[in-house]
Length: 419
Ligand code: ADP
Ligand code: ASP
Ligand code: MG
Image (cartoon, rainbow, N blue to C red; front, side):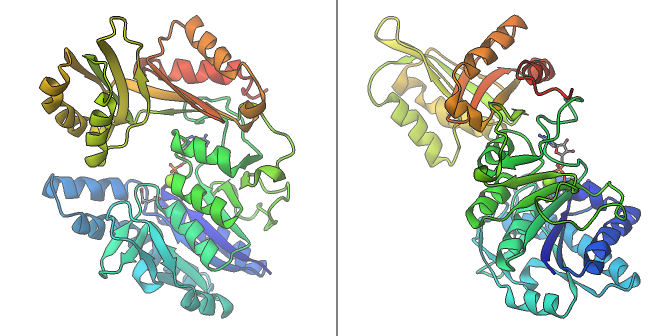
């Protein structure tokens, strides 16, 4: 007997028929003798609609009330799945974040989980009851509902898995694993059998939204194996096999040591979530960067890529950086008042950019990965506007019109295409 967490995303619970199929997946594991905690997302499109309603109600709104509204979708799904499981003869009960309770800080809209009380849940699991947990939500010390940021049900799943000491955390979605690139853009992307926590962290944070970045961070910290698999596979045909069993179609996110075959490059991602800001002919003297980036930090704006040219005349230089596209206006408003003190010539900005990244742990020990990337893009006449690197990734900022071309080109240059 094992203790399992099974998480189902929005498309997997899109309507009552799909929820019935989810219930069959759950029943299969229960009949195999396992204890099961299920984490559900809102039905596909619901959270978008709820977010939109809060904006329509008032563009500037209280973040606590935003969380009250957007957490509602998961409550509906948890009740529906519990009803369907019960109708199939499976003992089940729904759980909202406050009922567990799953405690968080007070950062409404992107709260961090502080603690998960496991005793009530575990007692019910020990009685053989399936716990159907509403994802994406918790409760703050002030007793208010909080949410974890878009895609946050993945993080609920890992947090519950850690709390109840689950043997495995299965993330069921609309693809049967983590691919070498987004299958919606690269039709011949290859499924990865295994991917290390570290690579998955980079893949997720650089655009592969198949898992929320925080969920991978938490899985790595608590050493929870995550299996990404499809709820669209036939529930009857899937075996209730354990981690590492090759009969499970999916991707295992695990420790690097458990991966025998290491790739130089494991994946290509893209992210349209960034915007570019350039200060032309800003003064080249000590303290300028400190002033600009200090003010942006004070405004809680995350800066990602930064490029500063060598000053040709010793007096002025150009400075380019990227910020989240949602903070673009605010960042401009922070910089504009500096026009006099920094005496820059012009402030330019663009949201028509995309960050394309090449990721792989093998980069640590292989030279030439970056050169290959730059040459491939040059051959397609794609101009690179900014570059950033870490030990296991290289990212470039390019014109967003070339997103598909760049991603597909790099996918084939690094020989990731399905053969
Ligand atoms: P869910 O609603 O189940 O949480 P998501 O939409 O959040 O599902 O994540 C699944 C989607 O992630 C897939 O449909 C796929 O288009 C996208 N995706 C992006 N990059 C990748 C990748 N490298 N591998 C697999 N899926 C990816
Ligand atoms: N329903 C939330 C969202 O759409 C959380 C999730 O699905 O993971 O972002
Ligand atoms: Mg998701």
